[in-house]
Structures are given as structure tokens and as C-alpha cells.
Image 1 (cartoon, rainbow, N blue to C red):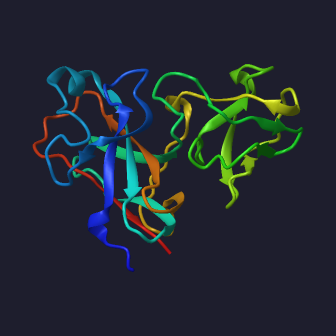
Image 2 (image 1 turned 180 degrees about the horizontal axis):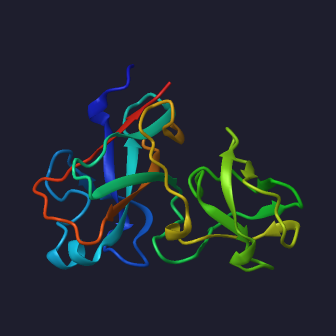
Image 3 (image 1 turned 45 degrees about the vertical axis):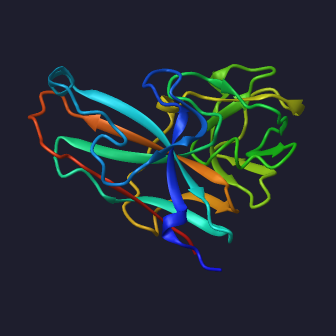
Length: 231
């Protein structure tokens, strides 16, 4: 069987209300319909465009095809036409929230004085490339490091720098609030954000960051397009 685009669906995250707790796991009861006004972000108010505002949304791509959707990437096919606004994106695990540091549930990790962290089981659902983590059994978020690679089996995490905190096995890990992560302007498939491979009914999150410059003029029908593909 082939992959059918109609069975690649986007959904809201479990806590959709904007704020510190926005994020978490997928809400399969809240499908996002493409091309509908305010399907991701609300209208920007006069007060927001005057002072400037940064907003975040966490959405999920879910593969509802019988076949696996492998080596998936997401990118910004079309950024906002208004020069005073722009979106950037980042992959997300189900753990991360907009403004709270959040512990990874069910998994434990082995931290070493290197860039490698070993997970007790496949961590693809819980974590994503670009998120910041640390050993929260012993350390605080001053020891955080960005995830740069997650192995195909989900057991080995590569960090952006050598872990400088407490090392050892069976440690808890916490994901730093997503507002501290570095979002990217992924403008094509080559530079797209990796989401991994999705078997039937599996999902991966995409964080979207919208920045509205201060003293912006009003703009009608400001839009953007996120696209996904696989190889």
C-alpha cells in the first residue's frame, strides 16, 4: 500500500491554551484543518502588534496510513508575507511544554562526561532534536545541553556539547522549557527538521514560533505553510 496524503493528519497538542503549560502529548480529538483561518495562531491584536509579541504552538503530524512513513522532515514551504512577522520551527517530543521545565516520564538515562546519553528504552516519542535536557536527579538546568541526534533505535542521544554535570546510570532527565530552545528557519526539504519515522498511528510534534515585530502595521490574511515529506 502507498502513503496517502489524506491520511497524514495534523492535530493540536493536549494543552492548547497559550501559556506556560501549552504543549504536552497529542490530542487526537482536535484535528487541524489546513487553510482555515486561525487554525494555528489567533488573530494578532492591536495591542500585540504595537508592543510586539512572540507566540508558540505545538502541533502533531500523525501517520494514519497502514504503511510506515519513513525519514520524515518538516520545513516552512512559505513564510509569512508580512515582513514584520515570521515563523520558525523545531521538532518536539511529547514531554516539552512552552514555558515549564518538564520531567521525562517512564524513561531513565545514563549520563557520561561526553556527548552521549543512553536511554533505558526508545526515546523518540518523549524527546526530539533541538530540545534541551539535563540530569535532573542530581543537577539543575544550568547543565542543560541541546539534543543534536537521536539514533534510529532511540537509545542513544547525542548532545551538542559534553555533559558537564553529574554522571551515572538510572538518572531522570528533564526537558527545558521550549522558549529556551533555538528555532530554525527550515526553508526547504534539504534543511528540514527531522521527525524520524512513523509507523501507523504514530505521531511527532512540530513547535512553531511566531514573532510579530513591535510597532507593526496591521496585515490582513497573514499566512504560512508547513510542509512534510519523507525519503
